[in-house]
Length: 277
Length: 270
Image 1 (tube, rainbow over the protein chains, first blue to last red):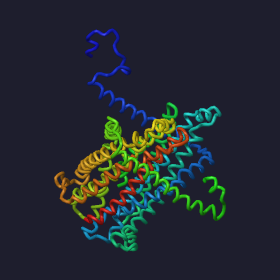
Image 2: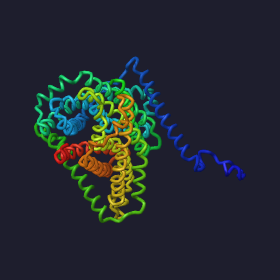
Image 3: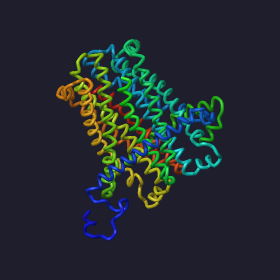
Image 4: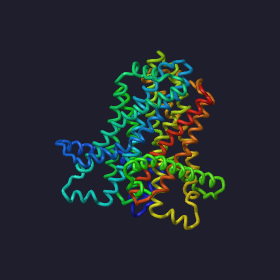
């Protein structure tokens, strides 16, 4: 404003000049908000486009099995490693309370409740997003940068139904299966930790787990994992497809995808906890 | 060596597959140990580049602040909601909900759960940056100038992460506690005064929590820098390096949490 009133001949263009100090922060906040809105909108549009391609379902079988193997089977090791430690940690954390209130008979329920409902699906989704989602973004981004997606279009192959649909389906199916595997392994880790630290008999551990735990607790964790899988699949595909600016752009897109998926998972977790509680 | 194991068949091929995984794990751990040892050496003995640490502190700390605040706010609400549901079954009243939550937050949850999103953000950033430097041969250029890339690139990130992770995780505990307090008030009608009760927090809890902050702050940059430094294969390699940095940092946090929690349980049992 001061520069204008002093009579400069050319008013500075908004996007090129240094904004005055008082406007710098609102401008940056607005830009950040607009970019978040654009990303959320882009993910929504992608979800809509994918949904229309589900009817009638024409899925490339080779792509589907390849992705199911790569995303699911190859992730079993890391999911199992995460889960066994998670289960053990849940018991270690509960141990001081168990001793204080002397409730050894329900430690199985306590650890199982937290693991199956909340921590298991959440941590498995984070690991899945780090391993599978980031890798998917990098792969799609490289395809965009090397113009392979355009090549598909030139051959009259719809990249969304040929490339993206199998990936999204495999991620959702595989995170569901991996969560079941992870839950089982986590319970195993919890049983081991309870035996070693608190001297709780594995049989009484499982007994309290089975009698006190609702099947719904287990199911709500699985329903959550489907939501997380959809979230990871859509964000990683969206950021992969919207890569700009060559090889460095791929790195930036991977970073942005991982961060977006992580915040999406936490926000989704909050709402699903309320809805399923 | 890869071609050798691939060409083996039958029982030998199986043995090679079984033995290959632990060998790969051992060599990875040795690589990380080497990065850690050299980083610690240069932290003590190396020259300091002015402003490098402050710049990294800004990139690691200030730029993660908003992300951490949002995620930890949501986590705080989830944790209190879940533990309230759990408390309903064990003890009828919510008197101990706040003190117990604060104890768990200090002892473990703030550090361990907060470190996960932090590792995702910071680890991916470090690995992508160092990885693209490797791919564009800037690391080789550094070596040609007789400058150790560890001294120039890893040490500032290590020191910055050590300080900023601790600061961010303490902030995370604060945010999670406030969010949990509001949730407890709205959902379970727990009075703010009843909830804000630090009588169950003991010095041992603070010590365990702080040990975790320092351990995670050290582990994230070391693991990510190691993954970034062994990048190969162009831009796709950078994507792979970022992926493995995020996964390995999260795994490192979980494993460290297991060992520190177990040790903490034996030293401070209650």
